[in-house]
Amino acid sequence: MEPKSKVFNRSFVVVGAIMIQLALGAIYAWSVFTKPLVESGWTKTQTQLVFSAGLALFAIVMVIAGRLMPKFGPQKLAFSSGIVLGLGYIIAGLLGAENFVTTFIFVGIVGGAGIGIGYVVPIAVGMRWYPDKKGLITGLAVAGFGFGATIWMALADKLGNLGGGHFLESFGISTTFIIYGVAYLVLVVIGSLWMKFPPDGWKPKGWNPPVVNSAKPIAGQIDFTSAEMLRTPQFYLILLTFAFGASAGLMSIGLMKLWPMQALVESGVSQEAASSMATLAMGVFFALFNGLGRILWGMISDKIGRKLSIIIMTATQGVFVYLFQYMAGSELTLYLFAILIGFNFGGNFALFPTMTADTFGTKFVGQNYGWVFLAYAVGGIFGPIMGGKLGDMNNFPMAFAICGVLCLLGVLTIYFVKPPMKKA
Image 1: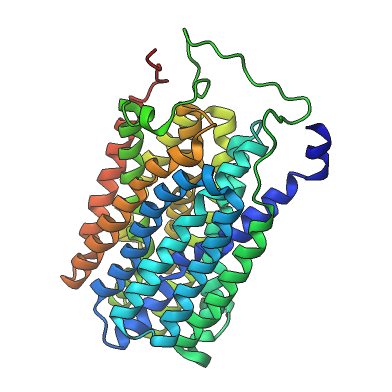
Image 2 (image 1 turned 90 degrees about the vertical axis):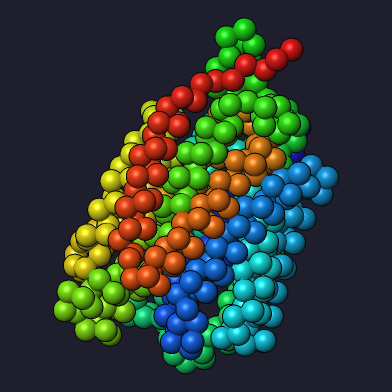
């Protein structure tokens, strides 16, 4: 086994994971398309329906992908992810991006499914290769998902005073979809080359796992199958906490262009300047700190523990999201709160996979985290659609107030999570 581990340098797992996640982060760049689609005749609710469909399929398909991983292996799943995601965007572009029905199907449903097929692969593979640094490696593995949004938004449109690409202006939405589809396909397929599990029994040099004691379990010592996990109250408490945080963050992403534009214009900023500021808030400040939050919250949780990290992250997120209804109308506070909300939102994707592994073991984390990630589907349906509906009713602030309160409820649900006992 030792010679095999020397042949395959585990650092390549990190490289492949980041490449894959850069492409899968396409879904967070959706807000850059909302303004031109509304101008082409879409309602605000329709823009959020595509976003919500993508989020829901992402989470639902991830459960299926987790169950298929033992049979097909992580490499084939990642490869399939790139093909499905890339073709979804390419076909949507070829059929005309302004067509709501076809874009809903191929970007929302097919694209979301492609993301779901591949998302759990870098997480599961990374934890196997880095059992000594689960928080850090998970944060790195999913950081590309957050950073990817910055890249794709910057290429599509200018990011405020920082400038940027002009794909939308030069090529239009349809051609931009096609270009992005090709890029997503290539990145994920290349990244899939390094998505392999280590040999059975492999461990990093100098690292020894803790001794299992079933009488006094320490978090993560006992491996639960998905069927066993679903019978524990801990699963549902973790699921609820994640759902509350996901609703707040995904609603904020979906509205990070529309609500600040409205608030800035109402405060006297020109339409063009407001659009530029809102794009900068989402495409740079939110997206970059979404990526950084994944890495830094992962590192923090390795030091202070997963549960305490989630409590701090969720409590502060509730405050930030609630206050955002008052802060989006000023350029400086818009950028500040985009940073704060993005940083905490990113933390979800480092903390909940590792919380799942710490609570139910690492062996089946690929399958188990798929079930926990259904919370993301709940949040993806509830948050953005509620935000879009309230936006059409000209009441964006109420959406942020509701999601802020939900985050604070999440502090209570995660507090009651204790290490589970496995029944004999």
